[in-house]
Figure 1 (cartoon, helix red, strand yellow):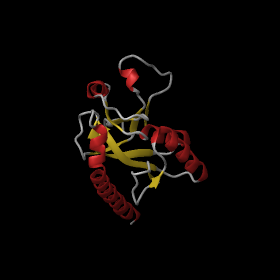
Figure 2 (cartoon, helix red, strand yellow):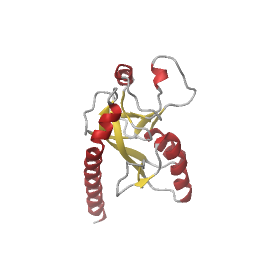
Figure 3 (tube, helix red, strand yellow):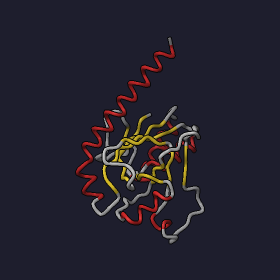
Length: 187
């Protein structure tokens, strides 16, 4: 099953599930209860903490839920705040941070890089958490729309349509590759 957030971030090949951690948790849980998918693939936009450039495509199976207050030791959590469905431990995965807030403090978000966290997307942590609960393999594909700085929202708006186009081309190409490979294995 291919899913996306929704609102203005929809794709003709993906089912919208809601924006942010709460909406996607509720709607994806409901979907899994009624018709458990074999695999979940989340597609969406992301902000870069500095390592990745605008319109880069990132594939990941690892997400975190680290709030900005944690970076300055102003908060802590007793919960696991990193989830991974990456079973290939030989390959370092890009960690996608999720929060219901978009980061705009460039100096503060550089601390994410020191923790090994490279990009942010509002929904991905919740997707992996629901997938973990239902024992469903899952991953995500993201296109960078902005850097996490004071211009984050304006850059997101400016780059969003092109990012969706780039992401659509990438995902459809990957689906075609997978379909071709499945046909080869069936022969």
